[in-house]
Amino acid sequence: MEQKGPTPLYCDNTAAEKIANNPAAFGKSKSFDLKYQFTRERVRLGQLTVNRVDSANNLADVFTKMLPRNKLEAIRSRLGVRGP
Image (cartoon, rainbow, N blue to C red; front, side, top):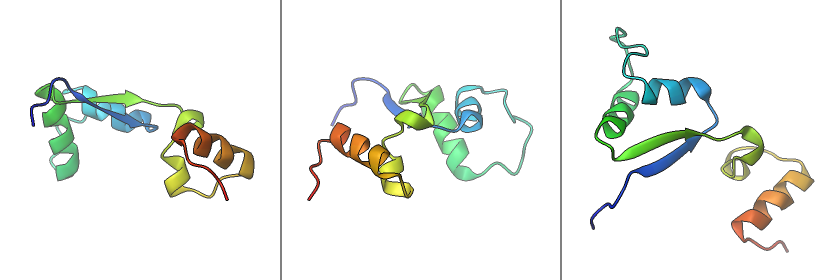
């Protein structure tokens, strides 16, 4: 399957976004984790874009955090999932 453009990756961590998008960021660190190197390489090759998403708009929170009912219902609605 051919990839027609870079896959967007959204994260709510500003430091992770900067590390992925800035080749000079932490460039001298020899203890960089392999997953960060992989991500930076994909960005360099134009296969991936790392974009900042505000925590208030992060749909992934529904899968990773306990949310207050109103936020859970709002995210569930945006995902197209109906409640009981």
